[in-house]
Length: 223
Ligand SMILES: NC(=O)c1ccc[n+]([C@@H]2O[C@H](COP(=O)([O-])OP(=O)(O)OC[C@H]3O[C@@H](n4cnc5c(N)ncnc54)[C@H](OP(=O)(O)O)[C@@H]3O)[C@@H](O)[C@H]2O)c1
Image (cartoon, rainbow, N blue to C red; front, side):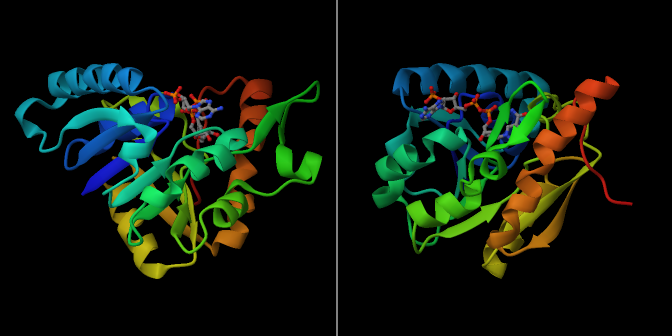
């Protein structure tokens, strides 16, 4: 599959690229094409030294706009605050059958700890904002509670679950196939995209518990 990661120069983007290059061709997107190319080279070298000949895919870099065209899966790995501008810049390039994946968590930190922005400021969930800004496209949300540190550590499995929300069963099935390619990660269907806030809100909760109880890079697993 052709997977593009908008904002792929960030920590999550690196983790996705390193995990999926085993089987897929990855494009790292950035607002700055040169930055994307530099990141892609670094990730490709890291992947080659870990996987060697066992790797079927490649990693290349491009600006966000060209990265968004001709991909089967488009990961929107950008901050919540940039959803509107990012969508405006790429929406006309996205194929109608492309599956758009949001790991985006609207989160801030105040004196009490990490908070979920939509509850604090009466704003929309990340998934809701995406449906407004990318009308008619197939959107799935997942990966909210996955730590970038663990995702990037390709020597270890994640031993975690990730909640998946979406309105299109075929898109969910395809994303689930990609999720299980990440060692130790299990997809759990949570419900339609309108329930994505229930997955998004878990991240500030996890980070607060992590800080207060000194647990590094926590994840979630239902038992
Ligand atoms: N980090 C985690 O452990 C974690 C866990 C779960 C979910 N998430 C979510 O996953 C997404 C990506 O996480 P991350 O930690 O990789 O994010 P990040 O490092 O903060 O940002 C990712 C990339 O987004 C681009 N970007 C930054 N500000 C932007 C702006 N104002 N407009 C457009 N693009 C901008 C940057 O790429 P360029 O400068 O190259 O364009 C940056 O490298 C976020 O929505 C986050 O909430 C993160």
